[in-house]
Length: 402
Ligand code: SAH
Image (cartoon, rainbow, N blue to C red; front, side, top):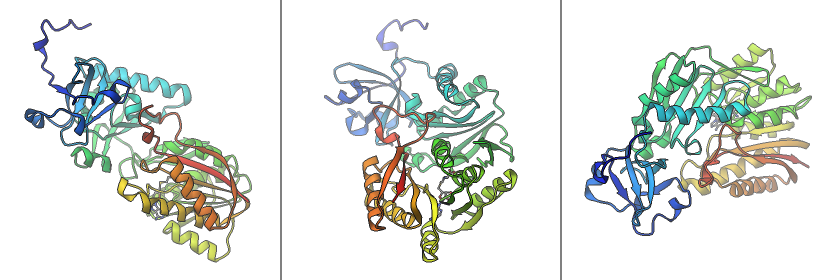
């Protein structure tokens, strides 16, 4: 244990106070303070973005150690209840070990999301693990400043062979951070793979989308694969073929994969070849492809729609929800009676009810009824913070259509 400071003025960590009354949510467990809740002093504007502070209420209640970013709307993010906590390699080692031990209880192999930001008490840090190869996103200025401590902690915890920073997420702009893709340790080999449901998928974390693989849909892919024997399946927004090829391996009669990215489709083709699976690959806009298939009178037993976020910012709410409605309408028209529509939204800004309503409107416009068989989200490697319901960004629905 560290000795307590001899006198209160020993503090080197700057003290930031909340405005009167602004501590209510933090007292209840909320992990953030917004810039308009901070009692601003001129010297605070000079604090480095992502530096460590002690946060206190105007009543002297201590909220512990936080990241502080004067450039962000989310001004303070809680790291540790102890206002003097050393946020060093040892601190990260403990947090990462806790995160890893949760995942070990759910997954037999170390292929999963290892850290999911605030829920794992690591604000803004995302880490996906591919065995000894690891890809992170530092989406807060605080995490960005501590990359060497994070790297050292991962090195201590894992048999780490490669660590890549995929710091090109738009979330970084909100923290005043630029985009970069940088190798932090070892090497990321070209031939990386994820095996899911017995199917081996090539993964390209350096050039691919996000960290290279969407671990968040693992359980949805299991659920769709379980329905796939003998089925005709259409997977629009297929990325590297996760849903479609899992279905092909489960005995689907026909699999059509559509994506607008030729790089994603090239990996899907490679996966199909490697696993001896048959599929049709179509590079097209998903909406245009669905309209075209409908005009030819094509029918499928399962249609999978797992698009990119249609609501990237709060302002895009109305247009985005119309996008989900249109997607559901076009997809529903292709589902044979008794078949299934799987629809997903990964937009933080779409509340689950709004997404469900948009899908319902789409079904109505396609003159289809149905029953929701399952509604859910990401798997247990994507835990959410109890006070940040919007961090449950992924919404999924499996609907049987009449
Ligand atoms: N279901 C996939 C993940 C989908 S990610 C999996 O399990 O791995 C969303 C995909 O939509 C990306 O691959 C992206 O290239 C694709 N995409 C984005 N806009 C599109 C469009 N208009 N038409 C078709 N595909 C699109």
